[in-house]
Structures are given as structure tokens and as C-alpha cells.
Figure 1 (cartoon, one colour):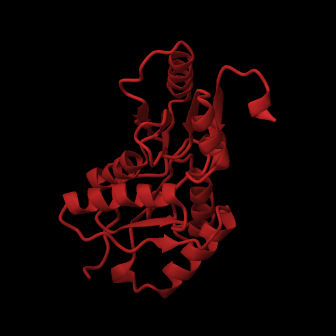
Figure 2 (cartoon, one colour; figure 1 turned 30 degrees about the horizontal axis):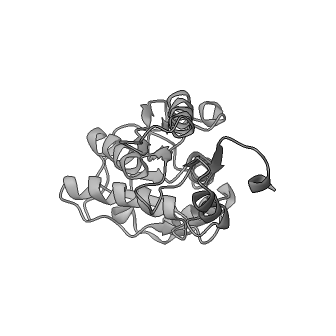
Length: 231
């Protein structure tokens, strides 16, 4: 087991806050850095994307193009998704529009789930209430949304805009290529190692947590909204 071996430190990928590993490492004084999820404890060394900022920036990109009927889609059981929705909601309030309730994907991350949700939503909406843009909690979600829009006869971005988050390796090969927000993995990895090595050297962590901004990657899935009937 890990505790019985001579290790200097460890990197933990997306551990839950109640993880037995976290408690054991803290009890034995083993340096660690957690990644992938925000930490509940402000003293735990953590590196992650700023999920609230990512949701905000994605929505802000759409609103600056002129969209106001913007939906958010994702599995709301997940903490990361709720944080990204919080950013979406903040950006909507900035333009004096109440955020829509999230289009929930239930407990799944698969693109098939977002496909089904979009088909159901658009088929039930009157034209005057159709959203003109969708913020997808991640790129795989956006892939399903793009397929659904195609099957509904809604051309992206001429009739509806779609934006993802994370810059999946397949984002640039979608039809159309997906506008998204890219995680800065090189900076991310460097921050993880810097935090871990500082602990191993016994240095105090003046700023133990780093939440890094994502970078907007403009491709072809977003554009100004079409002219729609007034609500």
C-alpha cells in the first residue's frame, strides 16, 4: 500500500472530499496535491480550472455576439457542472436576464444524453421561445447537441450557436468546428508540480490553491443570433 512505501509525495486526480486517502495522507504528513475538483478545505494544495469563470466566459462570448436566449445543458448532479452553471447564471444577470433553469442530462456524461435533451426541448418550444444559443458543460455534451441540431434541421451557427468547455481533441473536427474554452494543461501541470515540490522541500504554502482560467478558442459553431419572432 501507498503508506507503507517510501514516497515523497503524490498527485491525486479528482478525489472526493471524504476520500480515505486524503485523511490518511494528512494524518501521516505525506505531501499531496489534488486536481480536478475544488477542495472544501482551503489549506489543501489544489490545482483546478476555474469552473465558475469558464461558465461565465462561455456565456459572455455568446451574449457579446448578441444572444440573450441562452440555455445551459449538463448533468446537474455533478459539482463541476453546478459551478459552471453558476458562471452561466452570473453572465446572464450581467445582461439583466434571468438565467434559465439548466437543461438537465440526468446522471450521465454521454453525448447521447445531451442529444436526447435537445431534441425534446426544441420539439416542445414555440418558435418565439426558442433559445438561440446553448452553453454545454463540456465538449462531449456539445457533440451531442451539434448532432441534435443537425437532425432538427437547425443549422449551426446560422440558426443556433453552440459552445463547449475543455477543448476536447475532437472539438476541431466537428461539423462545424466547435467553439470552446481550452484548459491550459501546460500551466496546470507546472502548477501541480510546483506545489508538490514546495511541500516536499518543507516550504510553507502561502497560496495553496490555484484556479486557472480557461482560454476562449473561437471556431465556427458560434455567430450572432438570427432574427426571431418576438416573444
